[in-house]
Length: 97
Image (tube, rainbow, N blue to C red; front, side, top):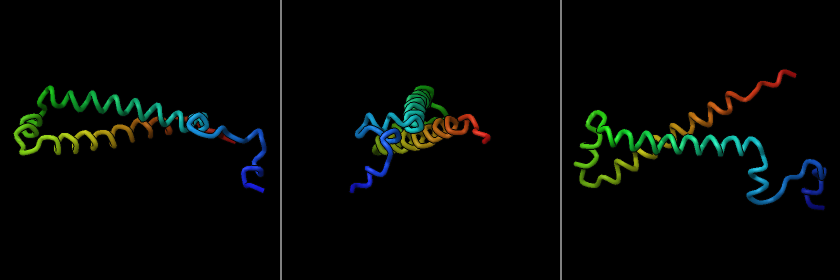
């Protein structure tokens, strides 16, 4: 007998990507990751456009500007997406049972 038969039919989830995004917590985290990703893009290009603290000059005067741009982008991506997802989880209603 497969282990999936031990789960009652009312508790079974659909398989595949539809089943994954059927979980409300995964959907919450995915939506907030996308919010963090969009915010990261805005901040990244905002930093380059405004040349904050001479950052754009430093990046484009380097030997290979793609490396510092990638490091800046992915550092911002990890930080800002984590903040957006963490804020979403922390703002969930508390269940006082």
